[in-house]
Image 1 (tube, rainbow, N blue to C red):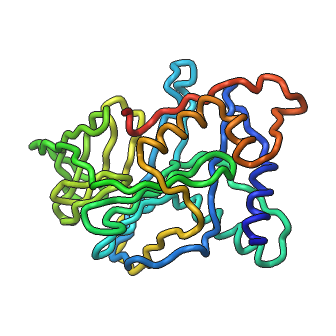
Image 2: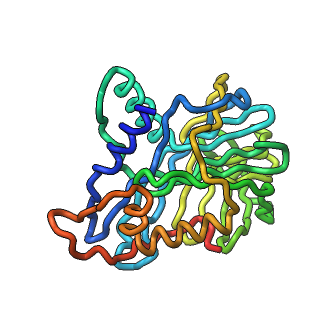
Length: 281
């Protein structure tokens, strides 16, 4: 409990940052020692994601990068932010050594952790990090159908021969490159359904670009986070996230029970924080 309180205090004191006249909100992250091992990975795949932050052309230059880890086990696979996990583990270690507060992780990361095959085959569970310690939403749904159409075009990625595929899912069209050299029907985020591991994938507008930068054969426990989540449906959670982006200051104040100030004043509180969704609908 002390760890959680210190963690939330740290986040509640985190100043909002300003980039190109746009406020950036760091997301929540929970204690790294609250988990259960649900499988053991045989592969650890590392991706770099480059993503646009805001659909407004005024902010087209504002983007973020994140390093994503995909762990693939016999039954379950998990995708999460590697940099965020490192920050969580560092903060936990400092608190356990007696620190009253720790530095919060204010870098922008991809806000979803995805567990394919959990809690049962044929489904996936998504954990979504809300703003500033406001908590986590979680929902389970069937594994998606990207309606892949395999093309004849090939390329090389990290020495692997990859074949092109075109797909579509929830309002976006995708270009993927998969390798039959690694016959695992998986990929970053929710991407799956091809006869080989997806090593690169992006939407046709290049808002979200995933590129594999490492493939390792290693035995790693797959951890499913057990700190409190609000169980929901994708539709209900999406409505919460839309409200969060429409009035971020009010949302964070209501969630945390504190007053949030921008700089030394209380002006300009009524602004929205538009956000590009990987799922456009």
